Length: 136
Image 1 (cartoon, rainbow, N blue to C red):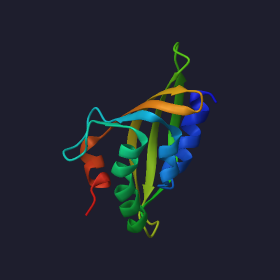
Image 2: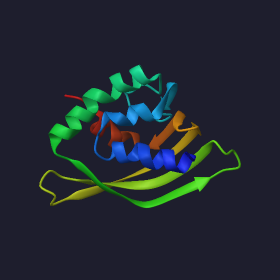
Image 3: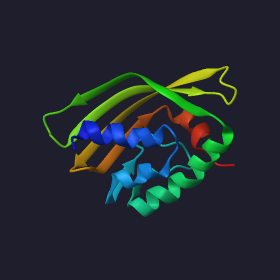
Image 4: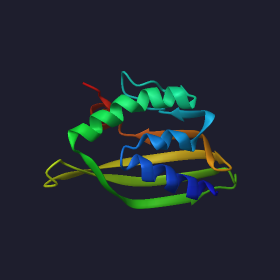
């Protein structure tokens, strides 16, 4: 798979808060949050650790009824390095009743080998994501 195809497959799972997203990572892959809000680690290594971080958050997000309706302004940039793709996008997040939505901007830098993510660096508005990633 190309890095673009891996991004598209992985984010199909992200949009539905599906933990199969974690299976898109190499066993020793890393999820990196350079601008992590307080309480969220800056680097998480290995599928088990990524799953442990995301499982309660995905569960809370599913229970909240908030959904990622779509990605807008998606731009995928291929680089000179054939393993790296850069994705820019805005996630449109809908309220449980669907009456309101908000946009959150992201940039992801993925290093992919074969069909697995070796590393994903996730750049986002850390204050907005602190609320989204909070588990109560």
